Image (cartoon, rainbow, N blue to C red; front, side, top):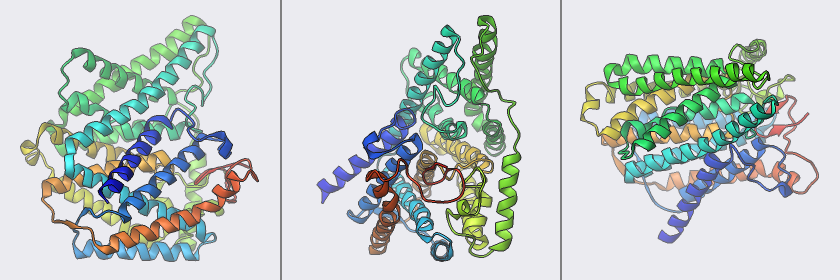
Length: 470
């Protein structure tokens, strides 16, 4: 049993590294499996990854955090509402995909929490280095493309040279999840060489320069709200982190102007094809209007998880707003539970980690509290204008950060820990069976060569589960 435990956990770590480090830059899945897009490749990796996490949750015994009866009943009610909503939807099988996907990701967050309990310093360093490895590959790809475009006077046209994402906003999600955690080495690690610190600063400035190049107003707004919120809650204790953010934002903006405005003008070539002052948001308004109509017509159970795509003939299979998506698809009661749980979690976090209690923490945990708060706030804000809860890499990174937050909170809170009950194993098994059963038809169909891409048959264009091609 111990050997099986080690093998499966090692496989989970390997798949996580591949998903986070390599898949944003390289198409990992062989083309023999008819994977025609980076999105589909990342989704397949995510599904395999979650399946192994669920298998790991079924086989070995490991500790979990005991929650109070009220929270437990809220989770039971949420599960019941999600299953009912899925059953009543136009496409129940695809609704079951989404709820089993999020249930599996929740087990992954619990795994991260447990690993944090075992050796939090090692886990934080491993995750931070994994994030740095991934963004380093992305930056090499981007800046090699930039240099080539500058030398040969060839415009950089999206998605090249960042080929790992079909849309610039999906890449922005990846950036936003990393911005906080990758500053930890400068804030909390024992870096003995000045050269290492300088390289990290250069990397962070280069990462922000790419963000300005991508022209995401939503990310900049979310980052601004995150910085302000962090400053309000943690005051002077957050200054080292905020100072780093402001330094890198400023230097990143200057680098953007030099690289994509001044140099192209001197070279008399158009290197950049976008700017921060980009197109309108009329498409968002139409999606939000449709969401409100669906909420009015299906207030209690919604139209079913993932089923927004069956009601939209437009350009998007989701409304680009996490709150409207939950209300339209899961229903108002389920959304109220989710929002209440999130609000209660935020309340407990601020109550436990305040400016006074931070003084008693280690240097690593002190900075981790601030970084996790900033990361969760910024991505929650950005999810109101983009599909943060939809894209595969964003989903995995979201539950990674949530798992770290749970691990840190319960480590400091001295919560009751006991062995996993038989119910959690059985439920993990049921989720695994549901996930495999519900996702297998499209995978088998594509692998057999009967289609040239994955397709679930909804009417909207763009990705939701797969990169739907019209």
